[in-house]
Image 1: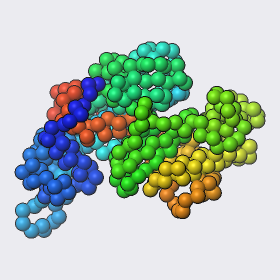
Image 2 (image 1 turned 90 degrees about the vertical axis):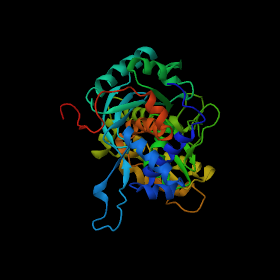
Image 3 (image 1 turned 45 degrees about the horizontal axis):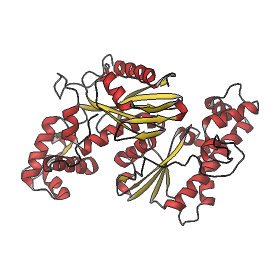
Image 4 (image 1 turned 60 degrees about the horizontal axis):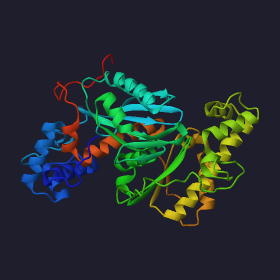
Length: 404
């Protein structure tokens, strides 16, 4: 995907400012947009006109108060009927892809086992699935694909290193772009999930936010004033955060966070205890739901370890809000009290009511991947739309998928 210009024009900056305030505060009249952005009314009118013509905004005359006196101030809001962003999340065992509208609503999603073999073959297989998936939405103009993955991500070059998959210096963004025809933006999966919170969750309400993720891998992302912190070489790692315990990590130490709380670790322990016949976390959860005391204890121990980790990180970074995500936290929802108790006993800072669970639930991975592209669209709407494939359907046609 070609790089977005680092120094956008005044016109592009103004368009992004109008989109940003409508996304946060909308629906808004043109006058209200001017008040929030500080732009002149002629500038607001021009930008709104361009964004309406593009299909990013539309007027909502039905929202004008009945009996309003004087010239009606017709509210403007995002047009969620035309454009959509595709997202692909590549996990260690599962790959998820989906489609979201401009308000972050997931329109549809699917999961497949992450293909084995070379990165080139795996991405070609994923691309074929995504092309077939998007053909079901012919009346949407897809602006591109947000690709999210664990491992070491080079956002600028679109390269991916993923030891768990055996991928090294893979030009993932370019391979997927060539196979689908869409511009592709690669990002780390935890950064993408944090971006989803910044755009459509807690982000607009707090000045600093710590996002904590746990499933087969663990990770965090920190944002300050709505901007994700990205250190040298991408995000940091909490995989080896020492939280205690006797689980042996591939690094040779014991008590590392990721090795202790990973789905596979819990499932392997359940097999060793004779609870389940194969190492599948879903079977462990089912056994716990059925009342197996040992299965419940394994999940409770993991929740406690996660709570300790969250407490340590909260003390180190001191954010206004901590948001938790990932199936290790959201799927066994009955274990959340164990996590929160461990957090409360670990943190030494005042106030323990700053922890929330992401509202995206099981759609987290697909929504986050889509949001990576939406974030790019909102920041650089004119540039990104120039890169998106053209379609021959008018902007205001029905958006129901074929066969729905």
